[in-house]
Image (cartoon, rainbow, N blue to C red; front, side, top):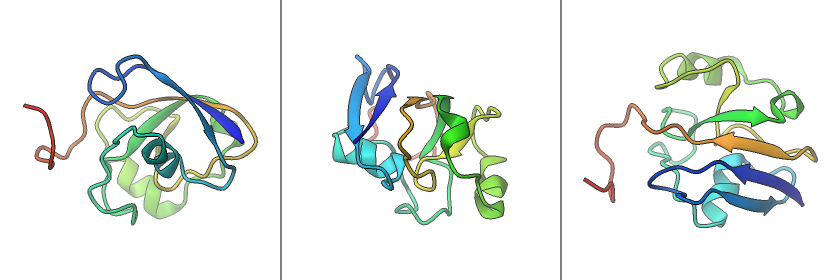
Length: 114
C-alpha cells in the first residue's frame, strides 16, 4: 500500500487525511474509496476537470500526463505545474501529498453545499 496525504480541504476533508492506497489505483478512486467525495462529473472518463488535484510531493513518480489530460488541465481552475486529473494519475510505490483545489469549473454539482 502507498500512503497519500491529503491536505485539509474546507468541505471535502477539513482535517486532512492519511490514506493507504494500492499501487495502480487512480488518485480519484483512492480518495473515493476512503470517503473523500472529490467531484468527478464525467465519471472518471477524462472529459472534465472536476477531479483536478495538485500533487505537492511525489509528482515526479507519476507517469506523465497524456495529451488529452494536458489539454483538459489547461481549463482547470488554479492550474499549477504539478496539477493532475486525479482520475488519470495512478498511484505508484512513492508516497504522495495532494491538495484538492478550493474550486472547480463545475459551477453546479449534485450534493454541493450552498
